[in-house]
Length: 505
Image (cartoon, rainbow, N blue to C red; front, side, top):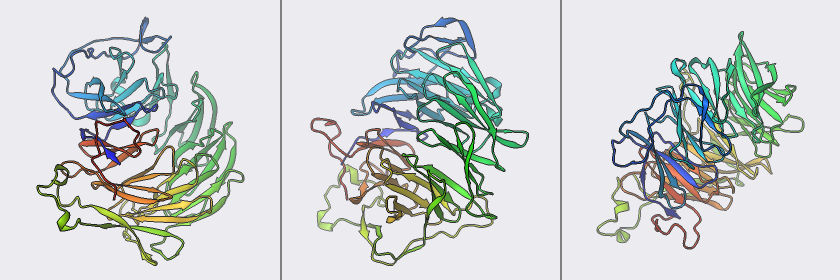
């Protein structure tokens, strides 16, 4: 396993392009007039102009109106790197701190949202001299995202008064009223044909389905929810899941034409749903609840086929419990002087996994019942890309990750960490799970076993988040101020510039 050099980062904004060719981290504030000599002056776009301005949209033209231009020193920058060599390909100047970063689906454009200013800046990789800026004005900005075609931008104004759909190809601007401020109120189908939007009007919840090609309304229907919390399309785009807030346990399943297919309620008069996830095949819907259980619905009858509990004590000998334990190298193996990678704090000691003997008592957290959002229930769950496994985290057992075998509908393994699990994510191609706990290590699990990997480098590199390359061959590890790449599979003659800087333990 190899690691790249450590690069600067801010706001944990670092994403691979969908085609896997590029990596776009946001670097921290700098005043560096001499670093970018050919960057074009920012242009202000508030509306649409009648005279087209040629842009990098293929056969289309960009028709955004230029109100003013200005030149200023480079204070906030976006760096695009080659995902294999990490060589800098483009440097872009932003007007303020970037708070959201998103690639277009075709990897040709990058969207940078500056919520404090109500601005969105769009950059082109094919023609670096082209760029645009969308100013929402006094309406403000709280969210911004691409449409699946990569040629429209959806901006949500403050107080969720409306969603503005800006086109980079035509003169049209579309407005969608009454978007609801909820956890997950907008979702696209995987094929990019339809948009589902949660709405709130007249003290009732609604869902509107739009056709993304022309943004025309296809269906509009009300939902039997008290306070809709989220919506999500099944991966096949045939079923829309709608769930209520945590105060009422209710999941509603609708067809594309707005028909109610089924409604599911596990219990009443207690905190309800905390997390929801579809399986990649659309065969299963996993519902994480505040009672510490995951319930699995099937796609045929939409009834519950099983429920997974998260007990504090594991005593089944068929379940493998991997327990992280610190280890120290023998005194005779210490090098003098110590290598640069070992000059960090003493807290970054190496660790390894040990298979615990049954029964195993997991560390539990007693929640504060007198405060909002208690740390109980299943707060995170994700299916593996092959549909074979489900990973979950029970917030009252914060140091453990539970891995379930979906084929046999049973618990397969438990990984107990020394620290609280901050994030986990499945690899996009193989059933390989990456975990981080805010320390200087990254953890990987596969059906063959699990491993703890020390991240080399000066100081204590605290991994706060991570993201996979689309090929699944590398992993971006993000700390508060830095990031590096971890290469899992190497080919001959490739990425020789990095060298082997890390070992598995």
